[in-house]
Length: 316
Image 1: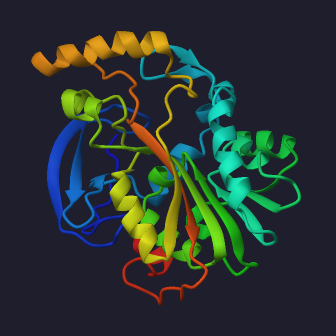
Image 2 (image 1 turned 135 degrees about the horizontal axis):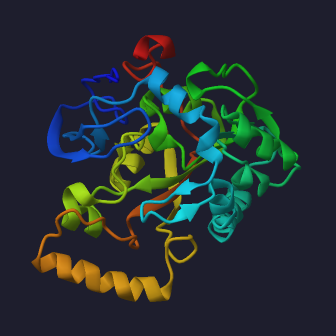
């Protein structure tokens, strides 16, 4: 069954370009198969799928009930997404401690793509907390944690509510068809001193990505952007945000431990000499990263810019 993808002529993080080809990978997944193209923005360096799954296809994919049912991870091991999220609790606690240290009092903390709400639940309930999660099964788990949940897509959110003290994209920003537009609509509503936490971004310049090429475990059509850390920092800086924390999670995730680190080290060293064919890259420190940024107190919000400030509905 043919699936219509969306072509975007500009970078979907910085809104600029041009876009230059990098590689082609094949990753059969829900409703999608065949070749997918990775291009890189010549301005900020962000890698991205192009053409890419647009709004309609993404909403169909992330609405699936089975998305939160047991499945297989990249190593073909059975995994429960809810349990896997809970296994990241140690990682999330590290982020929460940093957020709670810097978070200004008052206002609203919003988690867009909150999943089961585990990350947001670590923010004290003395703050107003709002989980945005369209998937019904995940939303029910988030509600069971005592969170207020709105089942809505990021593209359809009405941001006329009170200003944001905190904004969370937990394993979510790179799934959005147009993160540049969502960031523009949200970051301009952050109060002075307000925070944004972005977790789970995939580094396209990591050692496994370089060595394994098409076989990198993290290429996936629904991981739509792959920004180097410098790209995210430069975009956030344009909105008056300064980085206050960067993490490269490995040991506090379900994918990394000392034994695996040693075993995977020899896999990577072997790949330095013999480029593996058909092999899937192992997890490795630095393959993903998370960051926390704070809005400077003395900063005038950006005026509307094209294409980031274009109406959401016209962006697809």
